[in-house]
Image (cartoon, rainbow, N blue to C red):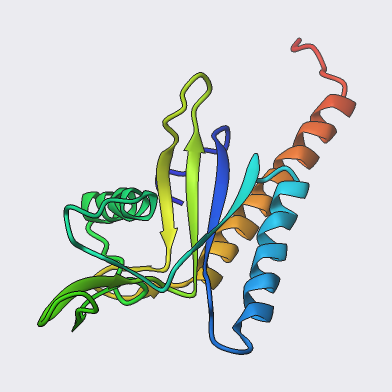
Length: 174
């Protein structure tokens, strides 16, 4: 996770694409359950589930909540030299309303977004988006879950160390 801080609190947003191909819903459900388990263990403050369509038009006169969410994810990626491709893809398609082509952004079947939760602020900062890519590789939802697992292991180790410290009596220096 970007700029990982062990004392920082995170929340997750899982965005699933509606009308996914047959057989994908079970995989989406398994990923959601796995991420929700991190909330149960205290690794995440909250997990939110959102649904979006297969794609959105890039027409600037047609702005929706999905456009705003995509813009925030794209801004995060650009500021860290990542790209949202191949999970999100811009492409041309035949226009339904007009003759010719229109540009659309296709969404992945599932997306995991991690936000840093800052107390007293309603503007949680995006810290990680899965899937995303850099010049060398693509980071998948599985990579995001592994990052959460790593954080969970660190939290558990820290808890064990804190418990041992509390039970060990401090000896005065002579």
